[in-house]
Length: 121
Image 1 (cartoon, rainbow, N blue to C red):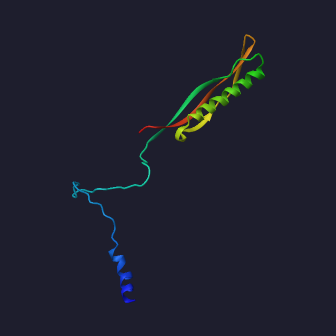
Image 2 (image 1 turned 90 degrees about the vertical axis):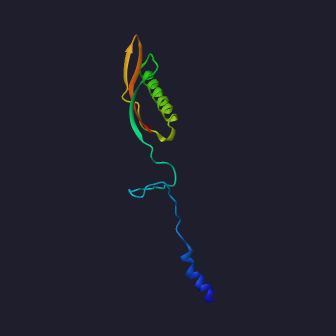
Image 3 (image 1 turned 180 degrees about the vertical axis):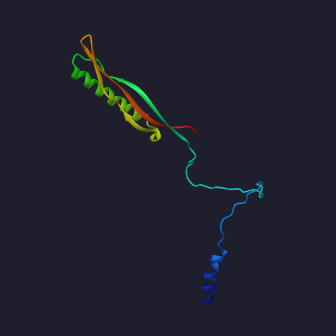
């Protein structure tokens, strides 16, 4: 019984911290060695704001032209979100719809805006 007790008390003395041998680094200056687990987090990003023109198909009635613009806006948002790899899209807005009538046909258009996070480094 005494031998088991001695082994249990002495075991923590055998456990040693892991060490790393570093060669060819001058010890005269301050040196920092950093070890990280997981993905590299040194990526740098830039926020880019951009604009696009959204225009719906022309229609004889203003109500149809507005519906066409809404359809074009939904398609544009879907296209932007499909290109959203790595959660880069921050915000998407179709903007304010403006309609005009020329030669008995109405068209609606707007300036859309979006913010995207772009990896720089």
